[in-house]
Length: 152
Image 1 (tube, rainbow, N blue to C red):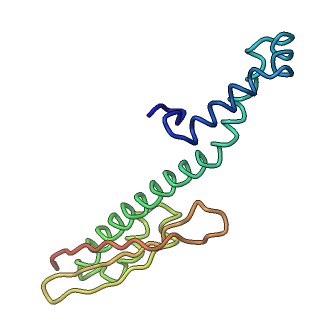
Image 2 (cartoon, one colour):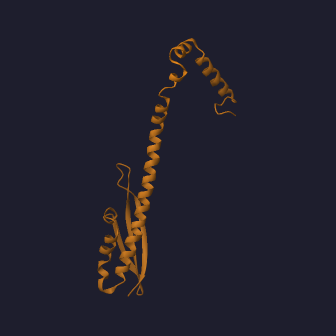
Image 3 (cartoon, rainbow, N blue to C red):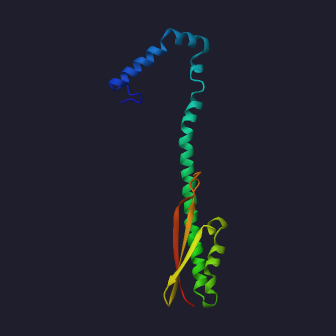
């Protein structure tokens, strides 16, 4: 089957209609005045205008995926830093402050820390709200990471 669909009954009709339009007297007169090339002038601009919303949607999705990945990475960084501090008895109460200090400002302000574990170890879970690049949407879910350290 050809790209124009000429192998199908409907495709053959389309090809006949296009040939008829191209050979009609008004189109032939226009071609004689302007040439074949001017008939398609601006076609690529219209194609770009039609594809632009799709291209913007794909770009926003790629950016959102990058922001989500960064939020997950920052949650892991904050959990490790907080667990490191929580494992030390003398400064264990400052674990959340230490975890937020290890993260970037915009993820630290969106983070929560939970302390757990047993007598031999400490486990800190960090949850970060993933920001959205879509206007009007406040968050894009949550990312959580945990870190476990032995107690000192």
